[in-house]
Amino acid sequence: MKEYSTDNENIIEQISEPLSRWGGQWTEDKLDTFAKYVNAYLTIMNNNRYTYNWKLIYFDGFAGSGSRYEETNSTSELLLDLFDGDAINGDEINLYQGAAERILSIEQEGFDYYYFIDKDKSSINKLKDKLIGNYTKNGKLEFRCSDANDEVIRMSKALKSDSKFRAMVLLDPFGMQVSWDTIASLANTHTDLWILIPTGVIVNRLLDRKGELKHIETLSSFFGLGEDEIKSFFYKRRVVNTLFGEEEIVTKVSQPIKRIAELYIKRLKTIFAYVTEEPLVMYNTRQTPIFHFAFASNNETAKNIASQIIKKKTKV
Image (cartoon, rainbow, N blue to C red):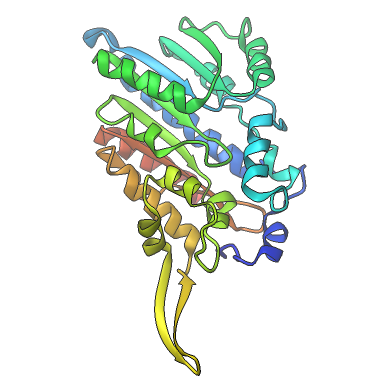
């Protein structure tokens, strides 16, 4: 599969999708993969929850409104801030974030608590109106207009305070809203995490061809690494002799999108004992990789199940 060009004039051409097609099959693949895992997770947990008195938490940090084409102010502002409004068009922002209905539709005993989080008040209110009364799960449904980072850290404290809590966490933002400090807060907890990594659609754009890294603070927050560490992973340096003396040439590594996924997986392994080596890769209609959907847990069986689901989805 081809990687993104780092030339600015080619970015929009390569990433742009008609509104009718954006958020199509790859979004369905993400949701199908996640729903299958949650169903398997609940099957296992339901066999043991009362024996060990577990309390199951479902947490969706970017729940949206449940509509396929919904542009939220928080997402738009982030992208405009990163790219000055030139490199991302409306088609790329309008994503389907509807995991909530699929999870609540699973036909077995569900979670004790469901937390749906979104920074956009209008979106979370729409989701609440859509779900309340239409789904009869016994668990408590809570809707919060809040920042996912703050809520994950808040939840992690609760998980560490009571060993009976078990959490299933979905973090699937369009961009780089999830900071590494948020991921690190889940260390030493009973958490199964699915996270959408915006490898091609966002991160690769910030890794410019010459390694100037104008958005280094965003990259550092995302990876939990310093500038030198990031540059050493994505750039090669060599010194050449010219008519004017020695000159240092900086070149970006080949297959940078693949390298982005590899680095994030490597970072997840510093927090979780078991991480999918091969995340689900999602492509646009030009067969360019735009996202990687990865799983992390402190349970080996959980990782094996997630890997099997990803493998089957990849073969389809």
